[in-house]
Length: 403
Image (cartoon, rainbow, N blue to C red; front, side, top):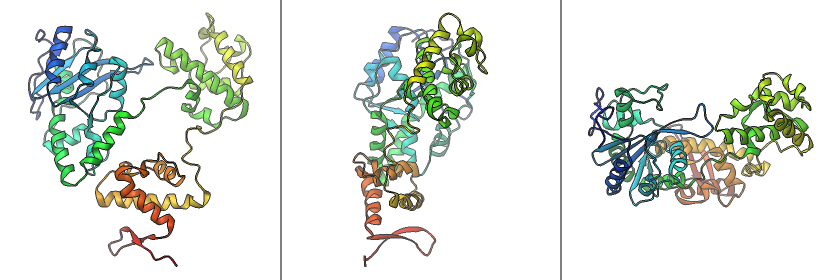
């Protein structure tokens, strides 16, 4: 592919590199890599990005692995939009902890994979809760990956040999991990569970930042009442929209401290605004102060938002059933230990509450969760089963004769 430096990646200590990684920084090279990876049944993908100083994530590197090949794609030199063709192709995209990477890929090329296998999710069905890639490679392959540097600047060019080695390692072993995980899952009859969960992750709506809900991310604002809460909502929405427009973190536009201060004592003049604690008086210049004061007035005139999000209807369960939530959660914890499955994958507290509230879309009403957990909850609620400790001290669900 492209010229050697910084393209040649040497293996790190204890890392059996599958091949020399190729640096891709031209449209022609990218097309060749996409064609090669697209011919494989499965390929591995990872991304490196920054979002500390921007509103939108800045894509800095795309790692792609297939067969015995690894390519490191430089999005600073080549448009990665053509990756959409690979992602929507028939091959399985193998990723680790894919949530944020899916968001980044969608922003970069407008597509998410048509098929997804997440190694972290799959490992959860084998009792490895939220396992890191390093942990999985160590446990399943008995290899040590190169040490990561949390402060690496992936936007810097050229990248160093250690950075390139680490980046390549993120995809070099994913296909082998998928093979081993699938073997173990199939042996336990859980491969379908993992595949269902990966599909739910793939089709889950990507994060949307509703400006009118931005105030909920400010801890101090959630404790506000009445007019102060309405002003906080309006000012936070203004901050969110401006941050997105300027591609800056919201805190760069207005600090949380200033936002809460404005909500508690809404200013009506630029002079009053400049006296707000933590507020940079320079930010009031050039019409920004007028915009912010307009947002304050809009909040003063608005009806305060409810303290909880209207989308959280699952908690509206009959008060008589609330004790059942704790009881069921204890049983799920025991079931998790017995089956060696991450408890969060079996059912969260929100899942239990949604089920008890009668939500037809509750996860415990569908698929393998309905059989494994949902049916047991129904029996408990109907009084045809009870929870008891067996001689070994395990909490078990036992049949019960109704009086």
